[in-house]
Length: 293
Image (tube, rainbow, N blue to C red; front, side, top):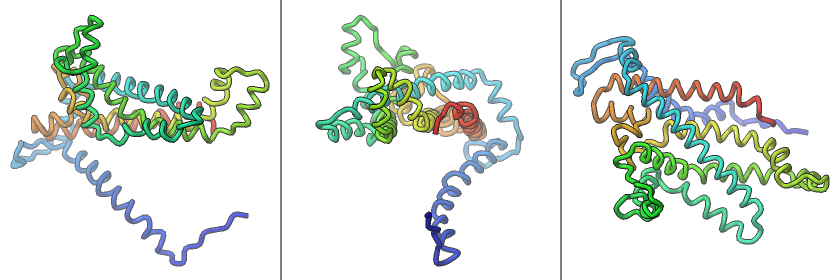
């Protein structure tokens, strides 16, 4: 029989919730409200002249071809990062789950990249693919590939996608490994006795039982691609060349901090927030139907 938890004082639960509520208000609700308010204002770089312009910032935003192009780049970037971060993580988790000797060392080594700061990860990949001194850039040149991401936009975007995905693989690996270890071995053994091959067991048993973990990581990785990849882009390309890697989150920074167009930058942050909320809602509305709990 379940035992009911009774707090000695009625106000104790509220005191326990207070720190998290304060953090949410200070670091999430209040900045979002400030951005929403600044998005309907027009002010100069010194803040001495502030005018209420309503939705003019949003109208100018969607009439700007550079912003529309940035939305397309962000869509491609987020999908590519999510796929490249989740697929290798699942493969590595399956391999780690089968390791008997040295399993702890193997798992620890795979988790190490998650401890690296995004900016440092970006610098590491930039150095390895540097056309002058990079080892991987030298290998590409030996294969006849004219590699120079500072001149070719497609190469710069590829480098940013790979670096951002590599940074997230360790995070996904942890969750996939935990999901695999929670699957009862008796189910796999029973399927093996019935003659199911390894690929069939993985397709019909492992993947359906991993669907809650996969759905969670899908949402997390999409949010990561939209927001947390700023440092990677800034360290590797700075949005270049010719804005080829300027995704939405970086454009918010460039227009607000560099160009000092605070109204447009705030409007962009509001649009970015709404896009992520809409994507998360759609994922919960439609993708979750494929999840088996």
